[in-house]
Length: 403
Image (cartoon, rainbow, N blue to C red; front, side, top):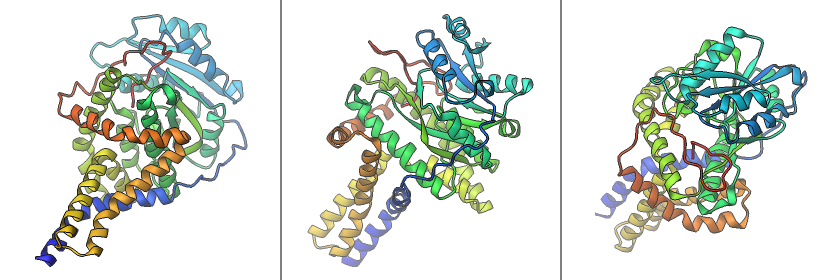
């Protein structure tokens, strides 16, 4: 009976251990990477700003992008006013941006807006790369310089660190700050160290003109960034992680707005699992392509909260079996391993978040946040293909559609 219980526990734990080992590897490789420097400062950029009814803040965003530390003759700002019903286009022009206006009642969403803008820009020519920045974003001054340094080394696609502009707005935004430090910075650094693709995050993305010609932007789900990153991976193009430059989006702190965001994102990600996850995994195994294999894992591995629940359940099961005398101490320690790794993973995220003591104290809210997320999965998901603008909160000057 003891041997059978130990064997069954080890067998049940293998999937959890696989995920934990993968996360441990990325955690151990999350040291600060080398920062290359641009030499020629000659790359020509178009900063594309997809905007849907962003009159409240589009002028401020355009002015900040025009002030980036890059030669004025080598950078332009282009606002894509997509199905706008306000003065977004006029205000963007007045602030100094080029404007592409688009009206289409059927093909609605950020993915369609980007496809439309990229097609027009490629037809015009005169640039080396495009950078996508959301309309509600603050960016670091060296953003274009950081991208240029990678382009000089042959990069075809890049992703800057995407973080939170208002981390101290509430406990929810502090948890999101930790989450993005884990998903974007920790894992981005780890994947970059392994020569893998860090994936796309929807904000702070850079593509060469050749990349857009080779792989047209035909990604139209609510997680169009994840989808296009998978399409790039299938074409053998890895997205390089840019750690020293950042884009910061303002995150919502109220439950109502956060619920709307999370349901759209969860619905879109579920579509990616069925549409791309398993097919890309099979393709990666057939081609023995580690870049594709990692991209498939990124889609197929459940969210960190679900992995944490599995690790806690495994640890509890091990403790119960050990107390009953059905397994020995070594197997009990084995059952605790994934939980210990996840604690290390999250702890490293807290350190990278820059929140200090408030980050550690905010973790006490994590179980409540996980319970809230699980409750949302039991509710009906909205259409995952619509560009739905999150309701602004009182006193907020901007908003973000991605948690």
